[in-house]
Image (cartoon, rainbow, N blue to C red; front, side):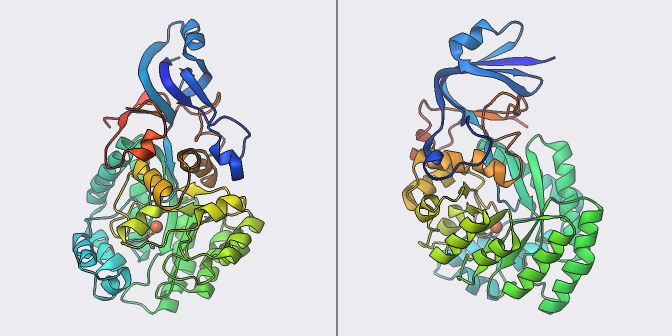
Amino acid sequence: MSSLAVLHASQLVTLSGPKRPRVGTELSVLEIIHNGGMLIRDGQIERIGSSDEIEKNVGDAESVDAGGRVVMPGFVDAHTHLVFAGNRLDDFERRAGGKTYQQIAKAGGGIWSTVEKTRAASEPDLLTQAKEHANWLLSCGTTTVEAKSGYGLTVEDELKILRVMRQLKEEVRLEIVPTFLGAHAVPRELAPDEYLDIVVTEMLPRVTAEKLAEFCDVFCERGYFDIDQSRKILSAAKEVGLKLRGHVDQLTNSGGAKLMAEMGATTADHLEQTDEQGIEALRKANVQPVLVPGSVYALGSSRYPRAREMIEAGLAVVLATDFNPGSSPTPSMPMVLSLACTQMKMSPAEAITASTLNAAYSLCRGSKVGSLEPGKFANFAIFDCEDYRELAYWFGMPQTHSVYIRGECVTAD
Ligand code: NIG
Ligand code: FE
């Protein structure tokens, strides 16, 4: 049995409490132990408490001195597009020149340009790039990540991406939750309904037969998939046993939040344009909003989702990076915390809860990760600061000291 004792955390941010996502004022309760410690056995947390108390129970456990730093659960990033080839530097430069996401997509950039590069990449090449992305996430303190397909848009290319994710799971220690996003865009070579038919009749059966995904997602947006098309895809996915997430109300308010509520989805993501009716629909159906302010920032927009209203309505808000080459080229959850506090007026404590415990529940991993409590996996990060608020306060500066997954230090994977 391998055991590890973590001692002398200035703040052990535990987030311990009821076994469910946090809502309303609960988002502000972090259950911090000052000068805290933690005992880990076989990758699981056995005990948390004051450093003195843990020290008395160290026995033959190896000790890690946190040295007066913050120790908290590893971030759970509940929305990323982890597997893609290349970058979108040209889009970035065109946006800097004043063009919008939609104009750039029409002019041959956008999702389509990443699809071309991803199709052209071999499986080993894609895996190498995905490993690099996974290491970036780890280096920012993220220990669990949701990863979407969606840059293939043919049966074989979507399966290739999902198989790369499966292989990645074997080769890196970052925990990966796969989502099938075949309906990310309509490929150039097909009419929308023809492609929709392929997603439903060919892709979904293969994805489920090979058990390649836990969730199905769709980009419900003007010029991508409308409400009726999205409903068809999500209904078919539900029928084959996939849980649902959705990119909705990002650029226009098309009633996407209401659709996710109607479908009984696990999450509705983006929501920049969602109004109070959409928020009410999510509340009634118990759908978790996943807010991705990095994409608002990187697209140069100022229309952030209404996080405060969502919290006040009692929604179990989640924060994520939306890491992707186009709209959100950041793997950094601390950057997202900064944006959540400065642009969406969330408090640092709310932002931490939204990016750890609530995010874990949105991936159906709430009983295993997202907080530091006995029985959970010892997935945690040590940050080079004394107060958890520093993570959101200092920005553009790495503060990760070390990262542990199931009790093993993985920072240099
Ligand atoms: O979440 N909105 C759709 N999908 C991504 C962008 C993907 C891309 O531009 O490559 C997003 O913002
Ligand atoms: Fe996304």
